[in-house]
Image 1: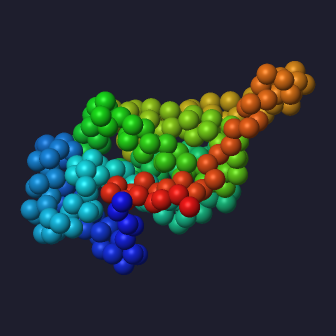
Image 2: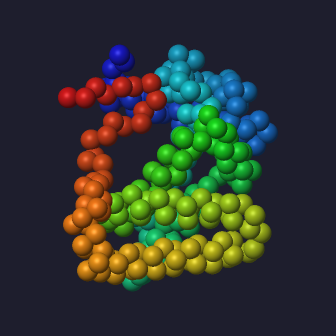
Length: 239
C-alpha cells in the first residue's frame, strides 16, 4: 500500500505535472495524448523521470486529466473574479459553462482530447472528468441538494456541457456567438425541467408514490464528502 505524500512533497509532484503538461500541449496537436507526447514532454520539461512517474503514473492519461482539471480551475477563478450579482440563476449557470469553454486550450487539442476519452479504455475517466466539472459548477452556485436531485442536476449538466463542447468545436461565428446562444437554449431547458420537477414533487399522487413503492428514492443521498481523492498512484485507507 502506498502512502499519501506530505503536502510539500505533493506540491512538488503537482509542479512537476504542471511542467509536463505545459510541454505536452504543443505535441498533443500532432500526436494526441499518446506515449510519444508524454516522452517528448518529459524530454523538454527536464522533469526527473522518477518524479514524472509519481506525477503521472498513467503517463498521457494523467496529463489529459490534468489538462481538464486546469480548465476547471480557470473556470472557477474567473467566476470568483466576475461581478455576477445582478444575474439570474440560469444566467450564472450559462456563464460558468461558457467560462469553462473559454478556458479550453487550442481547439485541436480539445479535438484530440475528445477522441482520446472516446476510447473504451478511457471513457470512464472522461465521463468522470465531465461529471466533476458539472459538480464544481453546481457547488460554485451554492447547490445544497443532498438527495436524488444531487445526481440528476449533475447528470443533466454533464450532458449540456458535453454537447456544448461539440457545438463549440464546429462554431466559426464571431466570438463564438452561436455557441453562446446554444448554451443559453440548453440551460433554459434545464431550468424548465427543474421547475417541472419541483411541481411534480408537490403532486399528491407523487407523494403517495414516495410513501409506497417509490420510498427507496428518498433514501438516495449525495456523497458525504469523504470519498477518497482521485489521485493516481495513491490509496487512502478507510478508517
